[in-house]
Length: 82
Image 1 (cartoon, one colour):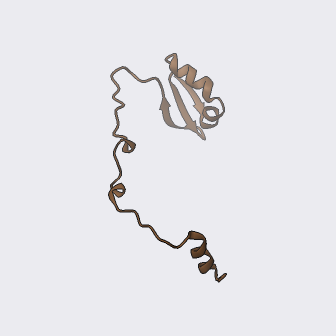
Image 2 (spheres, helix red, strand yellow; image 1 turned 30 degrees about the horizontal axis):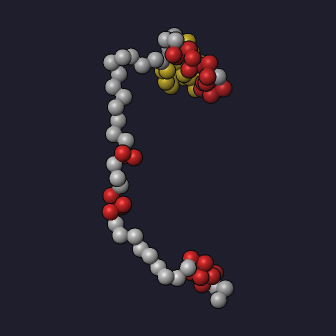
Image 3 (spheres, helix red, strand yellow; image 1 turned 180 degrees about the vertical axis):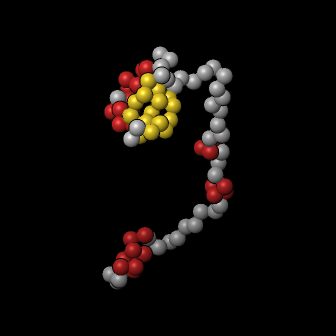
């Protein structure tokens, strides 16, 4: 297992990711204190997640408000240009 700083992870991201793909495991440190372990995923890892983008948000069922006054007129009124 190799130890790398957070700065090395940021600056050498592509090289480190290639190492991870080849099975390398890294311990990431910040100011010398270990904060994370970075390594390849095992075949048994379950990465399924419920992505909110697949479900329609609740607010899409609401009726859209439409007004007859143009937005520019409303802004002029708010700015006191009338």
